[in-house]
Length: 226
Length: 226
DNA sequence: ATCATAATTAACAAATTGACGAACTCAAGT
DNA sequence: ACTTGAGTTCGTCAATTTGTTAATTATGAT
Image 1 (cartoon, each protein chain N blue to C red):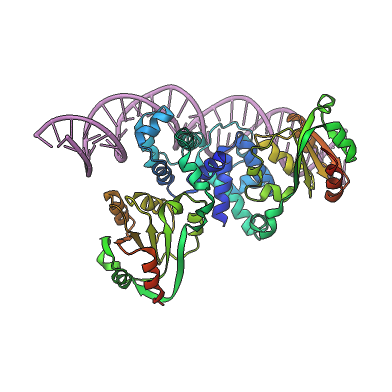
Image 2 (tube, rainbow over the protein chains, first blue to last red; image 1 turned 135 degrees about the horizontal axis):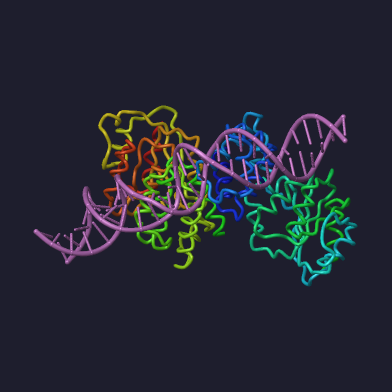
């Protein structure tokens, strides 16, 4: 099962538009600092950074293998919590709700209706329409197999709600590593918001919003959307 | 869905013990010659060969990406038969039967009982015991997701039956690329046997057998094994 | 304001890759 | 016996990677 995961990670990194971002995504999932990871690999932290920043355009597969295996090994030594969370049986409901609208709805209207607070985002895109939304559990969405794969084919003119958000870093990093970007990202009851999250949102020109409503309330409100 | 496949292929290649063999495995699955593949990539055939033969210990991810994307692209241009076969719904029964024995059974006894003909294999391992068997559809086994992943954790002191064998090349190449090797490989009613298959079997010290019985008959016979 | 930690960047030497082309093996046809 | 096709091996060399050190920039915490 570890091998399966390393394969998945490696495949994702290799095929990713930005292998460095994908690498970083996994590093943050495993809760490792560049320094930590570097020491697992017996290299200096700058090496890790170079890869994440894409300064090496095409690292060797040996390097990728070392990286992913080190992370999985490390987790195993810590009790394997992260790896096993990705294989947990009840993880098939990472998607809490998903719907398409029949007509476009302005981003600003959505935010107002769910009582959202804008954390980052340019004024000028608030009137753009979106055509659907998805509510996902943030950890499950990132770690469960294929969930992010399922995002393909969706319109990116949509909103993605993340529940179970701690700092809001992982979801944004995952989005950053993903070629299809939503217009709006809404954190459901986040504990705090890391500055990195808002910075990444700005870089991707995504409207980042938080709301204190819970999933159920949100679905009830969005039911009225058409 | 193509992206999903490229990721899987890339991941397999990166993590493989012998990336070159895994690359070759996929090339044969896509029914491409080195020359064909090379021309898709705008390189000379010797380049393809060098990679398959592992001359470069750690090729760059850019190279891997090019390779796998070229193959999937090629298949798509041909109608996408191979790619879609891997996603077909009824493919979850690639494993026809799987069982463990309670006690060891000599390879020679197994072969005699199923009326098998030895194609390759040293005399001296025929008396070794095996502790179980698996019957898989050869194409599905190789192309379906995770089937080969499921082989992990099995004892390699077992026999693997492949049905739907044409030349017997693909199954052996898949086995060669796989770190866990069975003791015995039995082809069920193969059309012909490519010499490459027997050669690979010898290299892996695997007993290669063919039988003209069909799956049902084999299961009936093996039911009596304990 | 300062201290520590995390991350980024630059400059550089040694090793390796990526690609070519030419020579070579091996089997399959004709 | 000759030819063709597929695959292998290898010398060569420019371009890249791998890794180091050291300096620099956030970010956070006290």
